[in-house]
Length: 134
Image 1 (cartoon, rainbow, N blue to C red):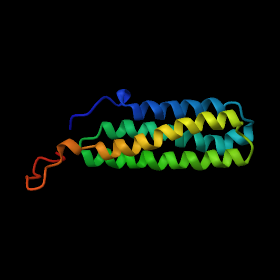
Image 2: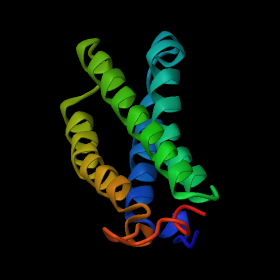
Image 3: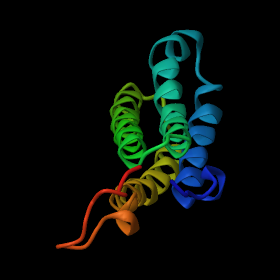
């Protein structure tokens, strides 16, 4: 399976931007907020990029797609924890806006990346599928 270096993928770079932004925000919270919402939020945000990277290292398109789906689940978890943080008044409007911009860019890129994995290797209708996903 030929693949790009995960570090070169825009979707991975956006995941890093999200994780770094979350980290910087959570560092400023008090101990209770960091220990509850903060740790969960950081883990979920870090998981998006980690699963994109792990999927790139897998030996098949199906494995890669599976890890990208996990990354998408982690992205939804980030959205959940951001909602909780906002409702608990842990985020400023500026922080919310900055993270929202990254999320708005990342979500469709992640879905597009998932759709693209293995697309070129799939056989056309009527062709043999023997070499696909090897």
